[in-house]
Structures are given as structure tokens and as C-alpha cells.
Image 1: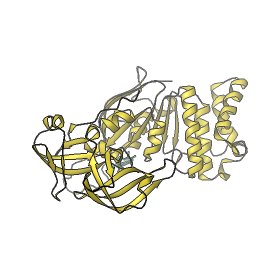
Image 2: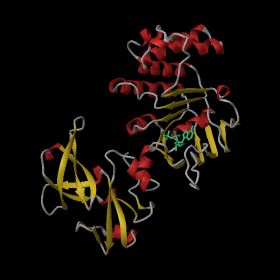
Image 3: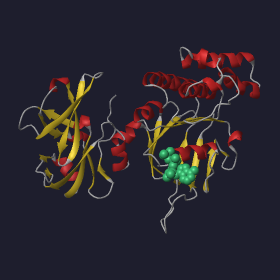
Image 4: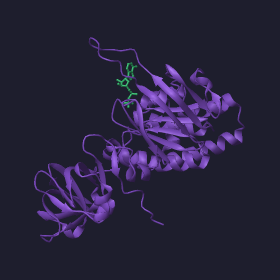
Length: 374
Ligand code: ADP
């Protein structure tokens, strides 16, 4: 097992379809970060932001133009992938095709000369993790397995090995919802148990939150923030991170602060507490409220009215999101089920939970901070 450290990594691909003097955009743009030994880190960000390239650079499948990569304190920047001891499960990752599933798993032990007992123990644990029917998959030739089945064998094969670093790119996106949930729970359990340093790329935010001890948020080749989910959620580095993290997303309203009055162009207005007023610059601002940050009432006068466009029930939580628009922006407010079928609600931000951003830049001006729950 290893820590992984990137120092100032820059990576350009050869331009494929640039027109005229369009500037080349790096796929990785000055990336520096450190992943601790045994930690699982998720990587999220919009399509094309560099998540896969980030993973490939760590694996050695792509080499950076400049910068250095270290496993523990050893420089692996120019070391080929097969010498790095990485386990990889990529979306389109091929298994050793001529071997049966079982052979795929035991291949590593044959190469590394592990004892038969070690091999059996770890194989058994991994097969158990993969659940009912997995032992049947193992006895089949890889060519006869479906995409999802191959993926499960691929994950198992990596876990039975003892990789320095485990790299996964959308490893379970081909599985159906139920199997995906079970696989991720079991994967997380085994990664924690064996303390395998893991980097996990996914477009699924729930999966990223579940798998990652910390989360890397990327945009256009850059790391915007690298922290725990709570830190990203309550203390986002900028408006981009605030908007990306959280479902349904934070509502962002354009407002003007004059005295203790916050107004938007459509006439929405609230009076804000004095200490908050003193913290903020007067003039144009952006106000961010998350679904749980609204105080919602059915009584006229308790907040500004919002017509409800639709209600989305959260069956497992005995709660719902009411959706509508305020000040020209979509709003999602979390309510209890007593609000079923309402056509209009009255909204007031819970100011303790409010986010404020600069009107034209992404800089935060005031953030709620991670709540002290314990
Ligand atoms: P993500 O995984 O977040 O979708 P990628 O790492 O695949 O992003 O891609 C980052 C950027 O690099 C994108 O602009 C993509 O088009 C470009 N890119 C990726 N692979 C190549 C390649 N082999 N050749 C040229 N450009 C590439």
C-alpha cells in the first residue's frame, strides 16, 4: 500500500481538431495533491474535465508533460504501469481473455508466489463479497461473460491482489441498480478492511460520496477542491463546487443588499439579521440556499410566496422536495410530508445556513461552515 503524491502535473494531449489559433487546453493543469496511504478518494467533475486522464497519469498509462508523481516517497513519474503495482478496473477494461474467471483471480498469486492458503483465503473473501452466483461466474470462460459480469470479475481480481494503489474508473456503472448498491457497499467494506489506497472516478455523486473518504472536484483540468464531503458541501471553495455538490442542487438567487433588506429583481425581498448584514458588502450579491436551508410555511406572510411546480417525494425519508422558481432561479425546498399536494408555499431562508457569493466572480463571501453535530 502507498500514499500517492502529485506535484504540479501538467498534461497536454496532441490537439485533435483545433481551428486556427485556438489555445491548447491542458487535460491536467498544475495538479498537486496527496492521497494518504489506505485512503479512498473519489474524483468528480463534468465530462471532459480530466478525471480519466488524472487516473491514467497515476497508473502510468499516460505520462505528464511536466511535474512528478510519487508512490510513498518514490518517484514513479517515468516508471511503466506494470512496474507500479497498480490494480485497475476501467469501464472498458479487458480481462486476460484466455483464462477462466477463476484463473483471472489466481493469476496474481501464481505470479507473486503467494501460498495456497493465502490465495484461498483471499479468494474466498472476495467471492463472498461479490455475492451469490459469483462462484458460478468464476468457472466460466471470460469470453462468455456479459459486460457486467466481466466487470465484477475485474473488480474481484484487483481486490485479491495486493496492489499499491487501486484505480477504478466507473467500475460498476454497467451493473443494474440493485447489484450496484450491493457491490459498492461490499467494495467499500473490503477496501477499508485491507486498507487499499484507492482512487475512484465516477459521474455518480452518491457513489462518490459513499466511496470516498475525500473527494477531488475537477474542472477543466484543474482541481477546484479536495476535501471531505462535509467540507465541500458546507465550505465550498467557490460557486462551481457549491453548485456541483448536493442533489437537488443549491439554488442561486441574484439579489441586492441595501441596509438590512435583500431584494431580487422580481420583487422578492427578505430582511436579514444585523450581524449578517455587517458581514456582507452592500450591493449586488448571489445568495445560495440548499434544499434544507429553507424555512417553509403554508401561511401567507411567513416568507415570500412560491408557486409549486411539482413535488418529489423521498419515500425512504418521509419527506419531499417542493420545486418552483424564485427570483428567476429554480428552487428546491425540503419539506415534511404534511406538505403533500400544496400549490403554494412561503419561503424564508434559514440565515444560519445561507451561502453568499460575489455577484460576478465565484468567490464565496460568507459560508455556513460545517455544522457541529456532536
Ligand atoms: P473525463 O474523464 O473527466 O471525462 P478525460 O480525462 O477523458 O475527461 O479528458 C480530458 C480532456 O482531454 C478532454 O477535453 C478530452 O477530450 C481530452 N482527451 C482525452 N483523451 C484524449 C486523447 N487520447 N487525445 C486527445 N484528447 C484527449
